[in-house]
Length: 247
Image (cartoon, rainbow, N blue to C red):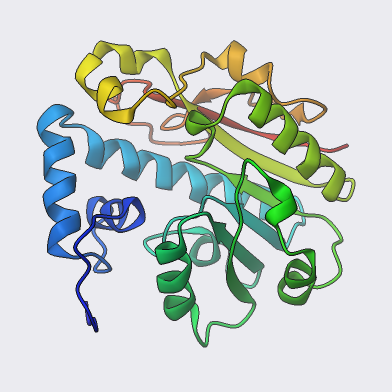
């Protein structure tokens, strides 16, 4: 990838881009990704399964007649992220990582109907509603994608965030979500690397923090299985996810 000054600190969004086969990463990101793979070899297939879930969930939401999407904790808007899987929809990406925001804005420059701004998923007062309306237009029904961040939020933070998103979203909106499952405990070195702020939830525990959102008929499933006509036979259920709606 072209660059002005090569970063010296790895970035999770660029590491995911490496695992997803993109070209928006640097040697420092590859080195960090390989260090993680030394502890847990399944990072690449796990994140590909997660990105596949984002695509299927986004297409499912679009098929319900939704053409406005808000993405929290978005990482980089590449390699099958939301606007690439729901052509014609308006998509606003957000992230707490300033380098993800800056690179995301460069990637999306000239892509109509898209935008990228900073927002802390644990504190939605940081969401600039003016930019939301500027990029998405007057809100009719909203598709909200919150994938990859709940594992770094407490139950109280998830409940508060999902309640605020429910209040923001017009009736008929949808939210796609996920969380790491206790299956990760099979790899204690991995859990240790993730740090003390890492939270794992069973499907039941994840359902319990959704607040007023109503699960769709698919319920909560491993992300590699959710509405996947060809689920991988050998993918352990490291992450669970689903889609819920505001009736």
